[in-house]
Length: 426
Ligand SMILES: Cc1cc2nc3c(=O)[nH]c(=O)nc-3n(C[C@H](O)[C@H](O)[C@H](O)COP(=O)(O)OP(=O)(O)OC[C@H]3O[C@@H](n4cnc5c(N)ncnc54)[C@H](O)[C@@H]3O)c2cc1C
Image (cartoon, rainbow, N blue to C red):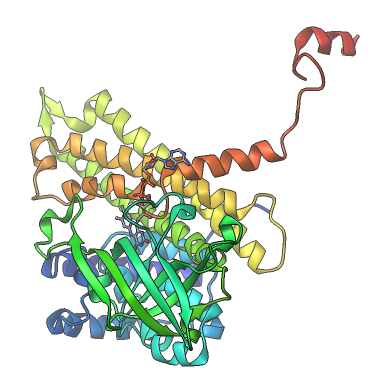
């Protein structure tokens, strides 16, 4: 059965969320600006401002909706989460106010799946309460897209693991209570069995910040960049700091990144919608060459292309969410969630690029200033095509999944060869 309806009770929740985010949460982006601001748990002023908002979200039963009931979340599933994340994508602070900020969501999931009782009590609980934040430290200075090139290593000494090596783009490390670090532990295994994942408390001796790296779009922030270039100098952690078994690092990473990617895509739908809303407002308000921009066909084309691309992308994201829910429910959807997630990852960067570019163009000189959010969003365009793996790698995954089970020509000519088909038809 195909249905694009939202049940009325849940729609009422979404309506409440939209109003709440627009009136209560979006102002936080202006009061406490900067990509790192929502993660700075030591900023007493911003924490005092969000506490009552978080309480309200909890009362509505909308806190940490990515978590299932076993982790005290409502377990709405990915389709409902998709509709919610579209709204949360409007504001940088919104995921923090609703307890769904990355990378903490993914890190919470792997702690829940692979952590010990002690780690869960020490880290998972406060992470879910929004009292601490965390970091995922996987990419290395010499390799990112292909984790098989990683060299940061860990070895066992007595009842400890010792971690040695460098990591690059460890986002939010400067605010994190703990870091999840991937390191080579079994160098002689086949490539996908060489690495393991560790929980490393940020204050462990030997955890060094080489520097914090700024990216395009951080100009607003003035907070010195949030992407940690890290060095682990013989960092010692207990044996049970390992998440999963030795050599299972890839498995643990995959469990985490799949969900994260689709959640980014859901939030990107919301950001694109906001850019499209800005285009419509501008077109309806600004005059050029004797008429409103809205009356120029080029402008109508820009708005139509943006709306069509966004609708297509949104449908892909929602279908992906549905497929994940089907697998969770023990059914087998017609399309593999893994391939769909890779499609979302690719398309997210493209649609965001196209829509934000058109929105800037329609706002003319004002569009490129720092007086609108568009310039900052534009700064994030390329990050969407890189973070969680570059577009090319995801395209390869999509293509391989099609090619793997695809047909081979029956003979010298393709199966659609017209003379052959005519002969068969006769
Ligand atoms: C904003 C942001 C936040 C991030 N946060 C984190 C984080 O918190 N933790 C973390 O561990 N990492 C993080 N990353 C790192 C991110 O995962 C890597 O940037 C990404 O995996 C690519 O690795 P790389 O930058 O080393 O690029 P490289 O691996 O050097 O690749 C460079 C380019 O080569 C091409 N390429 C690579 N492989 C292929 C291929 N198989 N086929 C075709 N072309 C290819 C692509 O064009 C690619 O962009 C973040 C990155 C960004 C931009």
